[in-house]
Image (cartoon, rainbow, N blue to C red; front, side):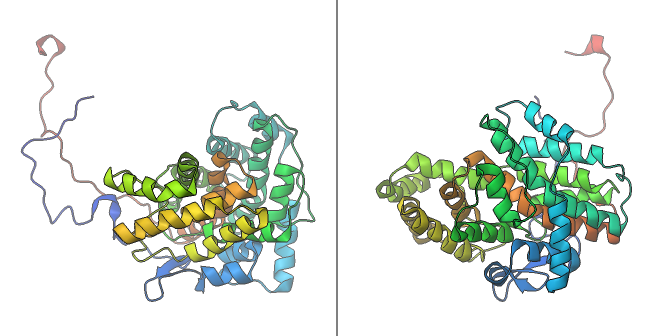
Length: 388
């Protein structure tokens, strides 16, 4: 396809006053989360995420996202009861998931399933705070069921219904594998959900807010967020990290592999971040629990490879890992198929998306930026018979 770029185009600095990709541009306010430059720490509603990961459950963090404060025991019990009672999905939706092409990516499955869930909800156009909060809890409860159903169907296995006496993390293992693993594995998974829950105006969150700003519904905004998260430069990076490690195969070959990759200027997934310049604050916590997984399964292969790759990248380029780098091998050691890593990310990030969707709806103005046109100047249409 031809590119119509005006050869006489000259940039106008007073017009193009933001960087490509909106890098560094502040486009709105939020009280949901931020990266605190003073401590290089990601905070949710003011709490450092590493502290939340060590001291709270994912359910507590979900409540925090929606309410703005951590719950007391009574509030958590009520919230948990509502979430657990909302986990079932309709037989029709289950059949939709089962009917999807066997080889479609699980992110396509969950995107389609959330869209269908929106079709089932008669309150589509009700965006009141109370209704949106209920929808947010419905998404939190049902998305793990959708992902687990797809996991089972893609393996030719029967669906395992959710239980109401298990945590979100425990229940997901139950629905995928038919059992709940030991507490250390459940904790590692729960920590990953907390770390993935929110990250200020990332690409998928921004996408969700743009859709919300048009006064579209929470399901549409969530579907849009899933579409953005699917990309390997965003959520899909955790999958690419594990594919890279499987390609390397031998920890003893990791150092040379990375040296060769840097020499060839290859894109190495799982390193670098636009916001963090001296290391992703979530990484130490996730690396700790990836190491827990290695200890639990009695295999240090992936962590040896992790350390070798990290050392070369930091020593040679001063580029540090992001959350996807330890999350990929951690999920692999838990037994999950690689193409389900990003849908697990969706299970966590739906909390952040919902918080931002509700925040956008509460003080809305349509997000409609301008662009600087670099195409041909206005011209006349030549009749077809005269075109050459």
